[in-house]
Length: 103
Image (cartoon, rainbow, N blue to C red; front, side, top):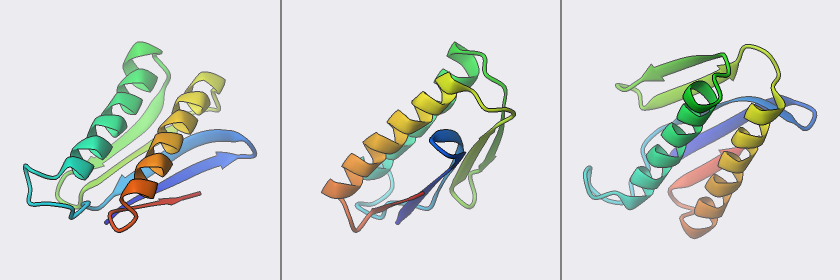
């Protein structure tokens, strides 16, 4: 199961961690894993590359973990992370056995 955790202060998101494997289908055929991976990388690339917002990114391919923490609160990054969470929640409604979204 993929577990996504989101962090923040009040209504402002300051980071997230996505870990695990969806287990929907074998590697290379898992559409749930592909969707989560694509959304996660889009979120990271928007924050770091498109908007140049400073963050601490940690990736552990062996454990299937990617975590991003903003160096300081940023309203644009918070909105991006919030939209990412919203999409993961929508996906978790369709695949509740494969994705868990936490606050």
